[in-house]
Amino acid sequence: MEIKVEKKSILDIEANVIIVNLFEGVKSPGGVTGIVDKAFNNVITEYVINKENFEGKFADIYELPIIEKGKKIIVAGLGKQQELTISKIRDLNAKIIRKLMNDDNAKKLVSILHGAGIAGLCPKGCAQMITEGVISGTYSFDKYKTTKKENKIEEFIICETDDEKYERAKKGMELGKIVANSVNMARDLINESSQYLYPETLAEFAKEHSGVKTTVYNKEEIKKMGMNAFLAVGQGSIHEPKLIHMEYKTDNPVRKIAIVGKGITFDAGGLDLKPPTSMLTMRDDMSGAAAVITTMKAISQIRPQIELHGIIAACENMPSGSAYKPGDVIISKTGRSIEIDNTDAEGRVTLADALAYAEELNVDEIIDIATLTGACMVALGTVASGIMGNNEEKIAEFIKIANKMGERFWQLPMYEEYGDTLKSDIADTKNTGGRMGGASAAGIFLSKFISKTPWMHLDIAGTAFLEKPNSEGIKGGVGIGVRSLIKYITLQDCDCHK
Ligand code: BES
Ligand code: MG
Ligand code: ZN
Image (cartoon, rainbow, N blue to C red; front, side):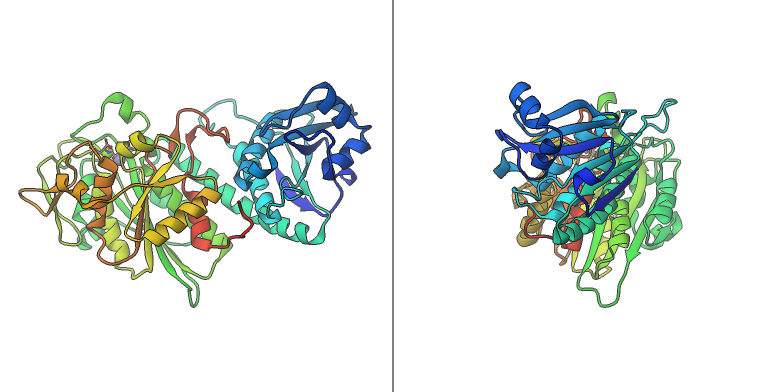
């Protein structure tokens, strides 16, 4: 499927489907929808609005049967004008595309640039979101099914006649492709079975697909770096741990960032084995790593003038004769000792060393992204991810940017008292202490392994993997965080993005 922006009137393109829109309550359409209405004998006013009572509620879609041989019109509801945001445009387009992708008569689609008319949203943002919605909406993970979901659409064309809007829309469309392909790639990684995706294959994937210089360290090398906490978590598995370091560099970078992804390719819980229902989806415990690899990929294509490091301490948390045990004391990379209280609180143990490694790179800020705590999922459900850190301004900025991208983050507290449960009689800290306030306690634990660098921690335990489809129709791996990270890292924002 090819997505393009063309500087033509929507009526001048030979297409099977014409996609227009209506705001809620509009009785006589204006703009491009009005032009299409007139060209087809007022069919939208007289039939869709007056006879069928289409109200233009957000994401309501009216499919007008063949109006001419091989041609149909889709009227998409945009809802209330003042409530339209660019990320809603993405959801809407995901829905439209899912409706049409199996339609034998929908090979070539032509669409209005939703949102850039009277709603006055940024044409670049609107085109980006249409593109993202179209690519994201066609996503399915069916590599192991004998019958695959087909996408019969060959071309999707966004029309804009205004010179300036056209130029901006083209840029937005290009960016939308990069972002959406990264998100889909993250989904593929998350959905992949841990039977095939383990530290070694994850590292190979990063080498092949991150688009940047990738160095992979093996067990002996990790040992030499003193990353004993990371190694302890992986020691119960038949798969060797791998430390993955991806680097994107430019001359005179304006800032240096490290992103660190939790990369537990399967979390059985270790000797503190998970019950079956909790273990079922634990191939998703590398969703942070997936976000990091695919963000690197996007950055390698956008090429901002920054330095970006992607770090993943990849291993598998398994019970076995060689597994780490409750009561073990491990000397982490920073020299700080950790008493293992629960082997299922493994993510923070691997991150302790991964964060310490990141801090040695002398970056201006570190962001970790991790499916870290069930407690975060209990607190925020599947609706929002948790965010914590040691720099309030950066947290506020991240939340704002993420919201624009349609990803919700909610700050959780890091009051000192949450650390009380982590006190150990025999080591500097325990890895966990109890169920209450678990997301915050995990945040406090991580903070002990950062000495000075501004740092943010994203807990995506509840949002990384969905049992029920979200507003984009996505089930399973979501690719959460990718859109926000790309936007935050590149800061190529438009003020007009709502
Ligand atoms: N990977 C899990 C967290 C998780 C839970 C992710 C549900 C996605 C969905 C993490 O390693 C874990 O097991 N955490 C424990 C910590 C506890 C033992 C303190 C948890 O949250 O139950
Ligand atoms: Mg665990
Ligand atoms: Zn885990």
